Each structure stands twice: as structure tokens, then as C-alpha cells.
Image (tube, rainbow, N blue to C red; front, side):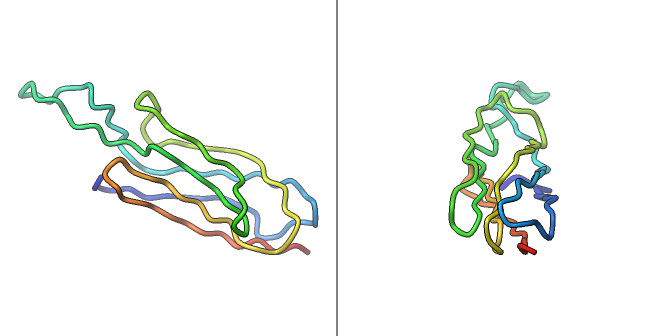
Length: 109
């Protein structure tokens, strides 16, 4: 398990029906590619977030596959159309099997 991993999400609390909203996510993660060596010459094991998904009320909004070249603390900004009150579910999948989740409610006004 990577230490100090913390997902953060910024999303609006309300939207009009059919409105397109902007969502921003950042996860604190070292994203080690598995190609570097430590001071003793040993390969540092790969440890990356390899997939990120966002769902709204169970419907997929975005599904991203990440590769070792991604930067430390990956940031995503994307848009989603909101048709009904519900909940965004954000999920980050780590190489070691850990899954990090966050949810954000949104109300259609």
C-alpha cells in the first residue's frame, strides 16, 4: 500500500437539469514507475494508480487507464452532464490492489 494516499474532489453541490458541470480530482500518490533505482542500486517497485473511474448514479462518466509515465499526484478535470439528483462516485485503482473512493452528492435544482 502506498503511504499518504489521499483523494480530493471538487464538484458543485447543485446543478440545473441537463447542465454540464466541471469536476476536478487530485490524488496524492507517489506514482513510482518501477524503472528507477534507490541509493543502493535496487529497483524501486512499480506503484501507480492504474485506473480512474467516475460514475453518476451508476452510469459511467469517465474511465481512464493510467500508465507508468503519468506524473506524481495525478489530476483530472472533466465535464459531466447532470440530468437528475444523485451521487458521483470517484474510484482510483492502485497496482497493489488498493482501491480509493470518494463520493459527492449533487442535487438538481
